[in-house]
Length: 494
Ligand SMILES: C[S@@+](CC[C@H](N)C(=O)[O-])C[C@H]1O[C@@H](n2cnc3c(N)ncnc32)[C@H](O)[C@@H]1O
Image (cartoon, rainbow, N blue to C red; front, top):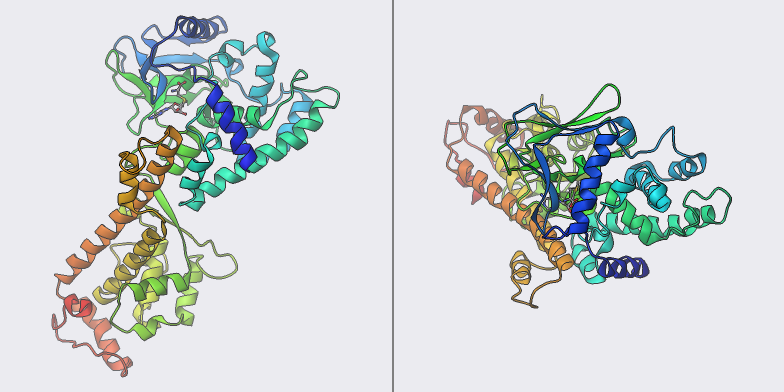
């Protein structure tokens, strides 16, 4: 692994990203050639758009050279101008593409991109290929060892990076080396190493479109792929019946506004891994938490739960059954819980699990489906809710405390207070993990607010039913008065 990061890192350092803050005359003429290439090959490019350089961080982009109206077609790209694989791919290349696992869809397309690159001036796509960035340094495949180490604070991402690296090395050393030494080499006699394959994969994951659905091969869309990302886009891409693709203004656009597409409602894991950038305070960011009954129970203890702790020491059959319904227990369990930035979507399964594990007996949850237990508005009872919220807060606290560096330490690192200015890859890695900590801190804050809000409410009639049950059905446990509002949740919080 060390070797691969070393190889990719050295390669990134010796190459210049072609997108500079200012447009060099060579780059400008190459882009002019790309626009002409689209036009002479049956496509169209509206005179209302041009290539721009918004800033060094985003690289090049498209912008409106003149005002455009909603619905205006800005680029039309016929099917044969889209770089993809399929019927026209040589059998030798196709057999390599088929050996790539489905989840690495970007690597399948990367092999076709590499073939075009190796064909050089003989390639139909030469104007597109010569406009591609020669490095995508924000993508973690090209990170230094230190930056990878900084990412290891959040294993769900660092493990994916390492898996990709391992696959790149083994595929390049195995399948690609074999292909090079056999007849009909698809790469014109050029040896494709892990670095070249890594470059091509970074190019495809950061620029490919899957407009025809996830089951169809992805495609590079020349020119259209120069649109940068925004969650408030002003353009959309539409596939046509004949295989063509259009870039269309989705609202009126003023002159000199950038043309922006949404790459999808993605978490920062995807933005970093596939595109090499992060969206600060990304509303779709998420933290993966592995569900484990013992972990939730320990979190509960950590939150200093005072009421009925003994009920939480074991998992009763009714709880096990509901957890299995949520696929959090049993042979088909999927224990990954996603905690998302917006609290209402803080993993309904996590909310349900906390309510289930906080229930004192089966009667408390009678008539409730596992699904309804995951909806914030469908609390079991104020008392159960406080216990569940405290459990979730304990989980959030646990997750936060497991990060080796604190939120404050990361902020100091980014401000250059600890070790001076960080190299770009380290800054990205620290920003990424800081985002996860901020998300968990926001969750903790929101849970605390919910607990406080509950504490202000008297327990009403609805809860007195559950309270009555506990007072009669569980003689050993703390008894609740059935008189309306005799209890407030403040009592539970003591
Ligand atoms: C599809 S390409 C867009 C064109 C690209 N900027 C270029 O120079 O050719 C996607 C790449 O653009 C950059 N990018 C796009 N949107 C961005 C954003 N909102 N913030 C930072 N970088 C962005 C990232 O480097 C990403 O990998």
